[in-house]
Image (cartoon, rainbow, N blue to C red; front, top):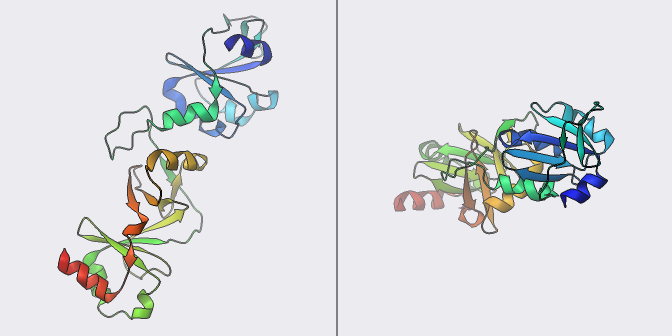
Length: 244
């Protein structure tokens, strides 16, 4: 396929595998093709506008070429530097990049990988829909709470010391707040560094439907079945405490 690509596509970009994360802004360009060659990553399929776009210009440690008759010319140079690499197996960027996403080190399971999923600060005004609070804090509040106040909420126990509460409005208790986008739940004020990969990550991380993916600020995560939540009430709280 490399021969056909060389004949039909003008621009190529090369980076080292260790800089794979620098391609995160290009996942939204589905026409791009990617190939891996030992420690190198090759991309082609750029339009002239794309090859001059900020998404490309801001990538450090890159090499950009113009292809002509099996020869590669550095961009803006009239002298060829190398021949077109042979034997590359080209696939769309959406096929190739998820393969590497599947190898992310989430630390939670000790998986070896090349790069990590990272969270970034998010200044959006999204309302929280989950609250992680100490059981002792919840117990003090719930003993005097009205049933109407608890009615819209669900909960479960984590590690026998904390309660995870879901719903709105949440209780006015000190704890960690989380916001939700589809089946992913993030610490309030945080989001995926590259939100466009959320659908891919969800497919890779959840082995069955009906699970939330809860992210910690350090990029680790844990899964919670949606059916694990039960209505929050004084009776359900006391029953759970007796059985714990």
